[in-house]
Amino acid sequence: MDTTPDSSLLRLPRLFVQICALNEEETIGQVIRSIPRVIPGLQSVSVIVVDDGSTDHTVEEAIGAGADCIVRHVGNKGLARSFQDGLDACLEQGADIIVNIDADGQYRGEDIPILIEPILRGRADVVIGDRQVGGLEHFSPTKRLLQKLGSWMVQQASGISIPDAVSGFRAYSREAALRLFVTGQFSYTVQTLIQSGKLGLAVASVPITAHHTPRPSRLHRGMLHFISQQALILLRTYVAYEPVKMFGALAAPFLLIGTILLIRLLLRFAEQGWQLPGNVQSLIVGSISLAIGLLLLITGIIADRVRETRWLLEEILYRVRRQAASIPHDVLNGCRGT
Image (tube, rainbow, N blue to C red; front, side, top):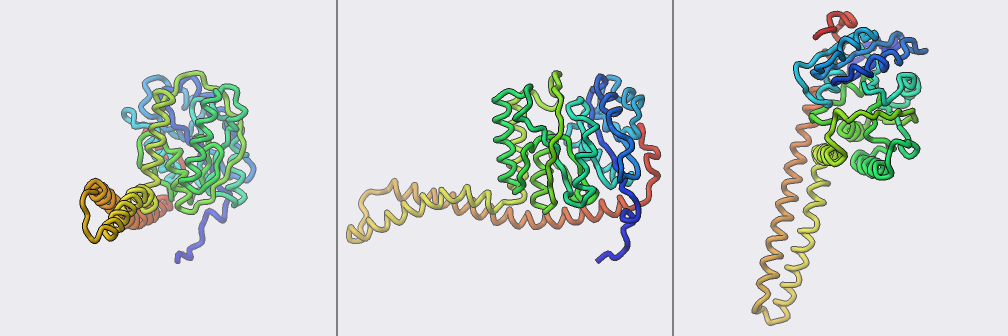
């Protein structure tokens, strides 16, 4: 066990606000200026912008508004990659708390003190800003219903009760940021929530204010595309952490049907003096169904072995990232323009 005193306990925490941006020249300046630079209980507040290959004046506007650090992508890498690169940059610069806020002005920088309060009080590792979509006039009834359904599905998969699972306004403790790692390309919201639940991180939710953003989303090509991508992420992440449950659920109906048909066939075989004219269909369907169920179950068992390897790799990654983040860095030194 590491008994070295944690220097972060001897000083006030440092907050880093990360903003992932793609062609947001019209709004990013206002978002940065809305972020309070002095918050009670914090040593400092810094802003990191992850420019995901913008072709407009997003970077210039961000610097002009007071961004402390610019992490630049050559070409568009996607929101998930930008989010992960932002986390890594914040950790490398010595962040104790990391807040993620959108560049389109949907969320208010003034709500950051409310968002980080559960972390400062030691009651949460991750805090999600609840937009309270039921009261948002710019959300259609269909969108509200889909949001509630999606949050319920994420709750079932993660074991965490969060009313607004896809909210991008979030706060992470240093420990949570070190533990979480996004592997997809589309978005981070669903994957990191399921990861948080499976890793045993304490997750809280606080009500925040959300503004209407009339411009088209930079993330998806419509509601159907958004739903399908988030559903795929949910499925892949859940299977990665709960393969036996997933494949067991898929195998159960096949095993049940196969077992019933073969038992029925055996009983008829006994009733007819151990002769079985006909009933070939039941024999074929029952055998195939039982074979499919057993194959799915075996796949789940093999995937569970892979899951154990994943746990070991995640622990190794966590320790490597923690060691790298503990190396002293000159805060924000040489960050702009990387």
